[in-house]
Length: 237
Image 1 (cartoon, rainbow, N blue to C red):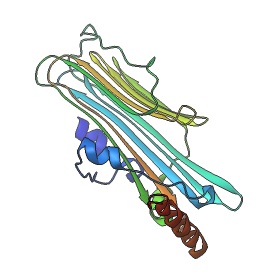
Image 2 (cartoon, helix red, strand yellow):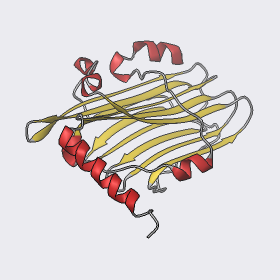
Image 3 (tube, one colour):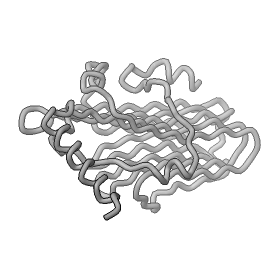
């Protein structure tokens, strides 16, 4: 059932394979960066997908994509929101309940997972990467322009909503609650999944892509000078 829902979803909701490099805490502690220039930001894109498949209750999926590109002195915005739900045969709405994490507020990236039962699978995946601006809108022609979608079948429900500076995706089923929130005001990304049942396969996936303009030679020289001056501070006097 879940495969059927995924096959029916247009390319706008399909995310490329995740790439990851494993690092230890010491490496993370030593990482540092530099803020270049707000004008270097030329666009960003966020894709969110939440899905659940249960042995008897059926399957549900919600996906949302938001594309923001610099357009002259302002920005153009394109959106895509889709949801589907299909109730299973012999669905029992009296199954165990699993409440969400709507009251949790996070700064940065936070992931919550609670699982009770046998044979369950739950994943929370988030990726942030810097890309070329041309790659952001590669499949934006399939965006449907919607900022909200809500589907229900039996005891299953899938929702996606884009608000001012925020996005929320949620999937509910008997014994299952999936939530994803991106809050620009609080600067937080939250993914949560709760399962109370058996044989459930569920997952949240978020990908944030940021496009920046190439660094100008002048800015490169300025940053090089700043780094050189910073290095001089360590020279013994």
